[in-house]
Length: 59
Image (cartoon, rainbow, N blue to C red; front, side, top):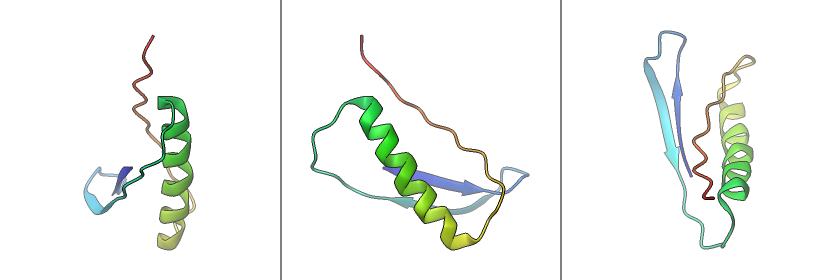
């Protein structure tokens, strides 16, 4: 999982990444990343955020 925190001018504030050895679908990986990202962003005490995901679900 990787995440980037930017301000309203889209300027870089912080970034994080993590590693997982768990096997999961693309949708599950995005959901897991979303949860982890929300937990991470709460440490910055922001109340209004926009979330962008890039799920690459195969067909």
